[in-house]
Every structure is written in C-alpha cells, then in structure tokens.
Length: 290
Image 1 (cartoon, rainbow, N blue to C red):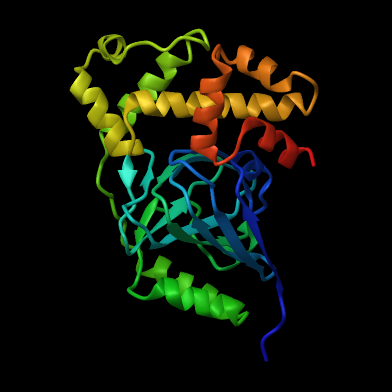
Image 2: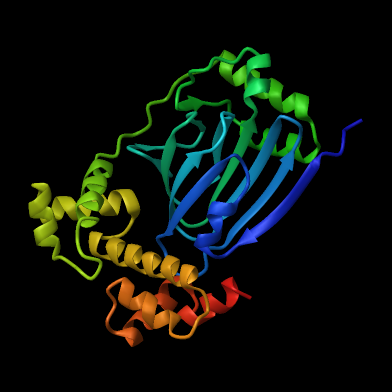
C-alpha cells in the first residue's frame, strides 16, 4: 500500500519571489520574454527524496546556487528550444545533474517543463552512488514519464531503483557547446563597471571585447534569445524592479527607485516596465506589499 507523503503546489508570477522557493537551492531569475512569469510548481516530498515539476510560462535566465549537498537530476519534459546550462545545451533524453556546492546558469525558453528529482546526500551514500557524477547523463527513453507516474503514486522505492539503473548504466553526454556564453559573460562583466545610467553603443561594447558587432549579436541571440541591447535593457528593468521592492510603498518610491537606476523619463520607464512585466510599477508595489 502506498504511503501518503507530503506534497503541494504553488504559483509564481513575480521574479523577485523565486529566491524564496523551497527545494534545496536559491535562485536568481531574469525574465527574458515579456508578460507574466507564469511559473507553476508541484512537488512531493518522500523522506530523503523529493520530486518537483516546473512549468515556466516565460523565457528566463536562472542562476541557481545550491544550499545543501543533495543530488539533483533535472530532466526536460517539454521545451520550445533546447535549454542551456553554462556553455552547453541540454538535449532531450539527457539529465542535468546539478553539481554540489556550485552555481548553475540556465536559460530556458518560454513554456519549458522540467522535472527535478532531489535525493538527499544520506540516501545517495546509502545506495552507494559516487560522489562525482557527470554533469550530463543520458537516460533511458520514457524515464521522465515513469518518474512522474511513480511520484504521483508515492512509489519512493521505485523512483530510487530507476535512478540506480541510470547510474549503473551511466553514459555521459557532452551536450552541444555554446561559444556565445563566454562572450555574454564577458559583456556582462564589462557592463557592470559602467554607471547605472550608461547605455553604451553596441559598437563600443564589441570593441571592448575585441569582436565584431555581428559576433556580439550572434552570441546573445544564440544564448539568451534576444539582442545585446534588449538584454541589457531587460537587466536594467529588473534592477529597477528589485530596488522598487526594497524601497517599499513609501511616497515617491517609484521616482526614487527610477533615479537610483539611472532612469530619467518616468513615462517611458512605466511603458517599458508594463510591456516587460505585464503590470505598472505601482501595481508591483501594491502586490508585493499587500
């Protein structure tokens, strides 16, 4: 007879709430497409083993920092394009194993569905799993649907047996390299040295990196799915949103946050903000501090 385990669901339409999500890691997210984030999560906790289902409505970049030493298997169930992790794509039929004590850098296209199986270090050691695992592992055809079915039925032992089999027959996968990732990282590092109000021409950014403007555009388009100019505009809106949430619903909070982030035209800022997040800055203040 199946035991009844702890389970639940939650929805999140605001990127700043992601860092508080449970599951063994801390996330920082940048929403790359416009509108509501539309994140939906369902989870089941089965004593040393938990299974998480994520559906992302919007495209996003997610930097995840591990906050425990559990083993995490991430499998893509559905996606409009191959997810990226650091300098590699994650093809279908491959599990991304999150390294212990490390950060991972994902880019997910809109309407991506991910299954994450989290196994405690104590359980992994008890089953004799190696401490060092390949980052990308090939998995048997149909594994993800079986894990979903087993999780819904509370079959803890069956899930662990499936993972035992994956590790016994482990076949590492290199994934397709994404050379644009390093260019994006270098561009971000240089951009962080600028004044918050600065919006340098892409010709200057390309020159600083020692590459052509077309190479710069290809790098951002292939990695993040947006142009470099659009990417940094989105990043600036996120910086404003974080500052807005920290300031709280005090008088002049929107103006103060805008000036702190180098925005001078409040009307244009409000229009761009609504287009990106599906709400006005004042709507954000009301919803966060309700």
